[in-house]
Length: 227
Image (cartoon, rainbow, N blue to C red):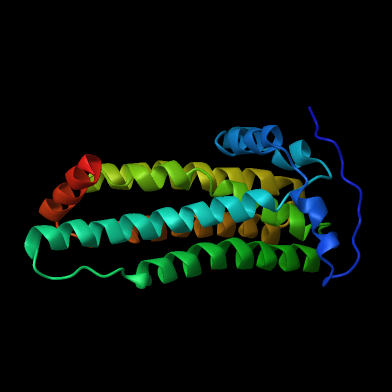
């Protein structure tokens, strides 16, 4: 069924109370929306959220994904260094955090804004908050995927990320159909949305263990499971 609509209590950009309505969701609502993001064929996410889009999912999902990518990257450097040179002191590589944060936060904030302004320019009645909500939940599938990418078999890792990327891309593009008309410009935007989501999926893969040789990946995975 449809979720209850929230009242518009906007009191200005610099008023905290203006944003509270976008975090007024309970666990059941968030779980329901997460489950919907794993089944892209429905294409009814905007109908499901009704007039009650949330930003809680956007912040929670992106932050969890950034943490997982940074943590797995640093765990890899730690285990491999302990295997090759136990005398050297290991140090936390903040570069993994910076790369993951810039990539995930930047994508989830900028891409919906770009599509919002493009669709508004082309005459569509788009909503920025609803776009942020939808794109935020579209990243939820990459959270379990980030753990599966620890598998030290390159072909299997490519299959995993392509399946997850395709599911996430289809979720975005199918839900954008409510804003897409018959013009070629709008249809090209659907293709662009699909390709951008797949690009993010490849970024997530390349930000994990892909730079390590196969034998070092095996050491990392087995060491991670033992720890």
